[in-house]
Figure 1 (cartoon, rainbow, N blue to C red):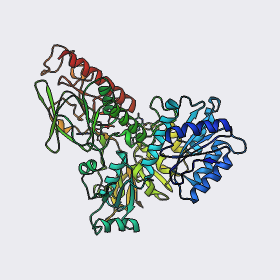
Figure 2: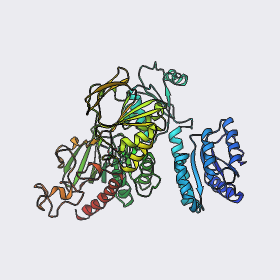
Figure 3: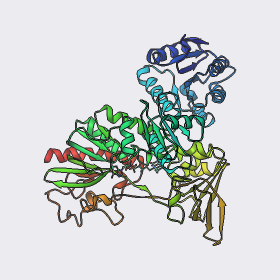
Figure 4: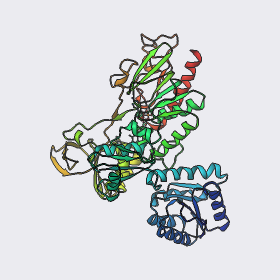
Length: 558
Ligand SMILES: Cc1cc2nc3c(=O)[nH]c(=O)nc-3n(C[C@H](O)[C@H](O)[C@H](O)COP(=O)(O)OP(=O)(O)OC[C@H]3O[C@@H](n4cnc5c(N)ncnc54)[C@H](O)[C@@H]3O)c2cc1C
């Protein structure tokens, strides 16, 4: 093993049996990460494992492991599998030749590979560093190894604690979670002068203690922008899902003064997906969190302003200005607006469910709560892809996952590839023709009444965890009659506004509304919130980009 001398820093480890290659990879890594990380290199799987054992005993953290695939005695996949036992949180990269791509794809399943890099990795600025940067970022966000991260002290069954964790996770704010019942949680409560009756307690890296903070307050304390820097913009985007983020990237990169306003956390529905497999350019899938993180960074790099925890509650049109009102009474105006507010989970309307939300009943927060379900039995309600993805994700840690599906079969609602995986997973059971009749529990969920709609028979089962994915609806009531919507609340645009080729009665211009334009010139809709949209990540991204192009066209003519 060859290594740097510094004892304490977090480690990036690389192993390759070709000494020249091993040295070259380590050299490139040191050049870029040497200041912040200790780069350790080895020339065989066995010596790399020995290095990892020593690091473990010394209490070091390992963030990223890069292993060559073709090594004698122990190949890269076998090595990474063994390394998992020592440092399960380390991000894993396989270095392969083009001919071994299939082996790398297999490794995704065997060792939950995060990435494979085709050799040669030159130039590293393009092929190596962006990958390792991403992995380091997600490693930091997931595991909170750094001591100076935000700390959350809460209770497993506190709905507010669950919401705050979800908020931080979805905004990619690294945090460490402590139960109020564990010694360190108790110590933090004492230090903050709290008796633990009001939870969660959030301690920010600079030592500020916040008790049951509101999202907006918390956002401001952890470095997220919550108020616009200017009064007037070329473009305001409402909603930070894929459509809104794409619009922010294109708007800002094409020179528009752009601000994006998001009520919770950027990423939208896609940000809650454990693995998006059908998005172009990601043959091995990409997690919603990764996609969001990249999009955020891309938008910010081009100069877009991203506001979080900032809910838009009204749209007013005065002459050429379009003004958006926020829930705190403040406002921002712009020449153009893109509505990209997507859809939100439909709530399960059965007795008992509402009161147990966040206390065993969850809507789309499978990723944040997954660790707590380790070794337990989990129920998932729904038969579409989102439910299937959650089932696959949770089946990695839960003892048993039961999918409750109202329809007689899954094939009509779930993509074929996902259906196959769900059916092949030994820990997943699918109950079709089954509906939830009631949720039971006082402090937290402890049972469910399930009814078989064919036999009419009901039974009550023990249940502590239920995740609900039963479709979604647009939350567009705040738009009132500012723009035209269909009876289900989806925003009408372009051709859907015209009757026999004629624009709506109040349309003020000679031209017809552009394809994604609402009945208010200069106000566009993109993504899931738009009537007749495709409800896919790729189409939302495409519409976000296209809406910016149409905004330009509108600006040129006005
Ligand atoms: C669990 C899950 C898995 C999925 N998997 C896939 C997949 O594998 N492949 C695929 O193609 N599609 C998938 N989808 C669908 C895909 O995520 C959506 O089609 C896509 O996210 C739509 O993007 P959007 O930007 O239009 O809206 P959304 O993603 O819904 O984002 C809208 C954003 O607007 C914000 N917002 C709403 N109202 C306001 C307001 N008043 N003020 C400020 N902000 C507001 C919301 O908080 C939200 O962040 C999945 C969906 C889910 C839920």
